[in-house]
Length: 192
Length: 241
Image 1 (cartoon, rainbow over the protein chains, first blue to last red):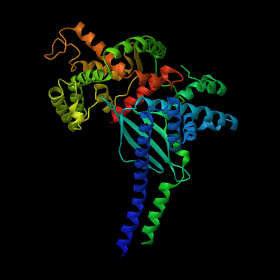
Image 2 (image 1 turned 90 degrees about the horizontal axis):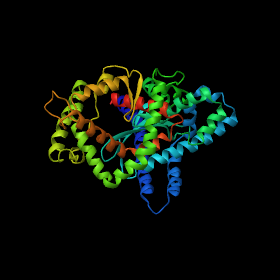
Image 3 (image 1 turned 90 degrees about the vertical axis):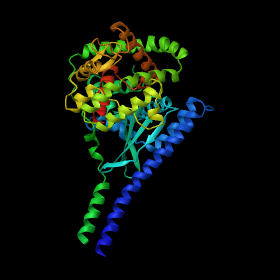
Image 4 (image 1 turned 60 degrees about the horizontal axis):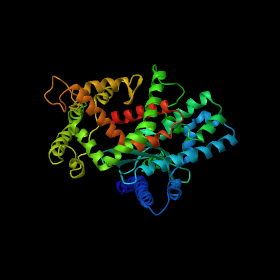
């Protein structure tokens, strides 16, 4: 009897986790199919496509957390509430434009997903591959479990290049020589 | 029994416990600039490469080339050159003790050189699911713990680091596209032809990646450190694979 209960509890413990991994994977597969449908719809303008794409990806990402991570804990903590609000507005717009811009590059390519894996406490990684005509490129989505038990993306490694890490390095370098207001202005425009 | 139950509950709770504070540990602090003694030169070369790309290659040469060679043709040409990389990927897979990958390289080369018409097509991937390796001697050095060294940007060729540049010279010894006097197999008859073929190979490949480059450069606040950083991250992933 004891061993039966043990197996039951043990099984329940792992099935709970396995269920989460599967549901995140399924959600991303369904989402990528919807993204492809929008990108292939020649009947709507690019601007309209972007609006639809943002509607789809918005609930999957925690853009505010991404922005905070890009600035770094200490820098973010030193900002006033007004500066934080302005930063999130500018950063969220930039990152959404950047992400949808990249989606437009791969209209005809296939995205293959492996099953998501819990890598540590409240963190999950979903390995996917972008299959082009001549290459197989790695895209890794990094999720965390938010307070509402929802799994949200906080970083994406595109061909091994982390969005957060890359912005983090750039932001740190920019803030060494510029005021926060100048930096924000630069972030709000196409810098180069 | 109670102990086991208690243990499982504790483990379960700890796995899902809220701990939003450790995100910063996952990312490298960017307080210190990386060792980059050639940064001034690298910045000039990167801006030169970007200028050539954005003002000459993309609007004129790529547009003309795309007109005469549609994407399907350019992809086939890239596949042809990729197939010729077989000696490099095979040797480097062996050096990194990836024997299964090395065998897949042999299978891929056999299938693509015959059924795939000298490598212009890639039935090894599309029909047999044998995916392509991306290995070079820079990665082999990295696999054995050799650090990247300082970054070096090359005119027309782009970003490297010292390790990968040195690795590239070693790979030339096995690459049939690079003419070598002492070798039986060469794609060209002499060094001059060889450089022409290499220039065309790089031009063809760059034309396929033009839109990707234009999109990714939009993420840069300052182009050179952005490219340097992205290059290093990408190489770290390739070495880990």
